Image 1 (cartoon, rainbow, N blue to C red):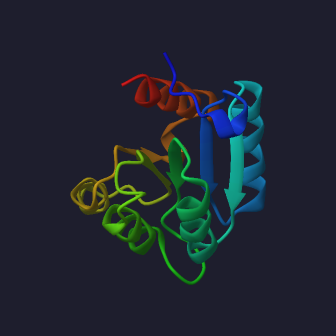
Image 2 (image 1 turned 135 degrees about the vertical axis):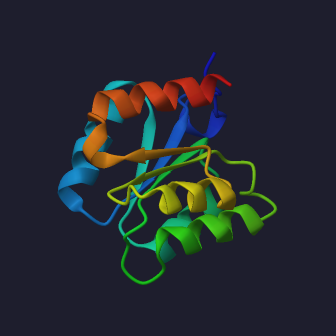
Image 3 (image 1 turned 135 degrees about the horizontal axis):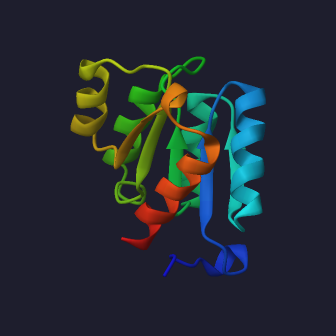
Length: 132
């Protein structure tokens, strides 16, 4: 059973923090088709502020962002009393072992390398995390 939020009409809410507008559009479309309420932020700062304000059920977070990078956003989320328990899925081009380990150490629930997964596979991973 998916977590439900009353503020979004019963839909689970997802915050997508992605600076590439084309990719953000693809992921947003796939998530909306699966009946998720989706908010999109294109920078680290706006993503962190949106997360603190909206308290989504899950956050998809890119690492390479203008200004505040994804690592800094993740650290900020995990320090926040209201945001620390929100599952964060790193969705990035960075795929070294060190990057994956850094994401896990900072508290990411999953680490997805963009080139290795289709958007539909990312949606499947989100469903699995929200069911936990």
